[in-house]
Each structure stands twice: as structure tokens, then as C-alpha cells.
Image (tube, rainbow, N blue to C red; front, side, top):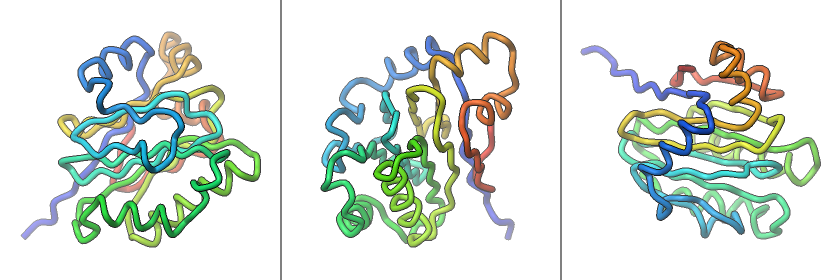
Length: 187
């Protein structure tokens, strides 16, 4: 029997394409301020915007995505136990096809602490994940289980797309750290 490979796409998109995509997702599946675990969304598709010093954690199971937008300035967001417990309640961690992504963070201590805690959670749960860390400007992300794609957008990405820059080069120019999981591909 052959092993089935689940591969998510990571796709830099223009601001217009992002706007059109989230129009189809709907505001009910938007992760909004104040960016704690309480605002997290589990749905077939979700999105969030204004990722600056925050970290977006997304985990897909092929049918739904759990999207969290975690702000480092909110003290309760630094509770690793609460984050792990929340994820364990929302997802079937025994599923083989779980895949994650981390997007965001800045170089300050609180921001790095959140990013590292979320990274630790993914490692502890043995969820393969991609990283797009420390962007040049505010980032927007969306995921749809229908296409199994992570859309990544910002003003900087928009400019690079207009110049015809290749997707992987866009990500490497936009983020200080780009680590694409074996379970993902850049589109």
C-alpha cells in the first residue's frame, strides 16, 4: 500500500487576490483583536490580518483549520499550558494529516517568547510545520481547506508580485526566516 502524502500550498498573493479570497470566507471566520486564544477560529476556512509582533499559528487537518492570532502584549497569551490545552480540546491530535504553520513575530523579547512557545507546542504534538518569521510589514494570512492553501499577503509582497518575482524568492525577501516543511510547498 502506498503512503498518501498530504501537502499544503503556501502562496504569496496580491492584496486584491487576498481581499477577494477573504470575501468568500466571510467575516464570521476572521480572527480579530484582541488576539487571544478566545478569538481563535476552527472552520473549513479562516483568515487574519495585521500580523506584526503577533504570531499566527494555523493547524490544518485537511477538513478544518484552527487559526490562532496571538498577541505578545497580552499577559494571558504567555501561558503555555493554556495554549496546549486549548489546541488539544479543538483538534484530534491522533490524526496523521495534521500540518501547521507559524507566521509573524518581531525581534523583541515578548514577541519571540510567544513564537517560541507556539513552536514548542507544534513540536510537542509532533505536528510538522512551516515557518515564516519576522516579516518586513504587517501580514495577512488566510487558509481554505477546499484548496489546501495558505495565502500570505502584504504591501511588500504585493510590490514583489508586480515585479514578477518568483514565490519562494518573495517569501525569502519578505521574512528573516523561511522554513518550509516537507509537508508543504510554495506555489
